[in-house]
Amino acid sequence: MTYNNAFADMFKNTFDLNQLFSTQRRNIEALSAANQAVVEGAQAISRRQAEVIRGHVEDTLKASKDLLTSGTPESNLTKHADFTKSIFETTLSNLREITEMATKSGFEAFDVLNKRAAETLEEISKASASHTTTTKKKASA
Image (cartoon, rainbow, N blue to C red):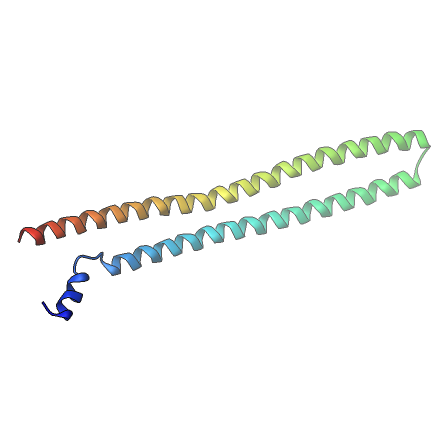
């Protein structure tokens, strides 16, 4: 046995490198798709937050103007309480909506990665079974 033969024998029973590279390429594609889902979700959340802030500022300016230009202190107190209640309810609703958007985005990314992980395990199992079968055939020959 020469040095070259021993070295060549070492790589005889290895996995198919093309298959390994193909699996890793698909893993990277899935990671990229999951990243894209997260980025799109973050952009949608940012847009919605900007809309919410704009709405709050407009409502606050309108309420402030109304409080400063009208009525008695008693009526202003009632208006202020109503405004505070309205802002609280709106904020809670918007918070719930944005939380749901973030959750949906996270699940979309997780689903992509989970599906790819299952596919990868299947590919590894098939490659391992194929490798074991090939090795047994070579051993018996």
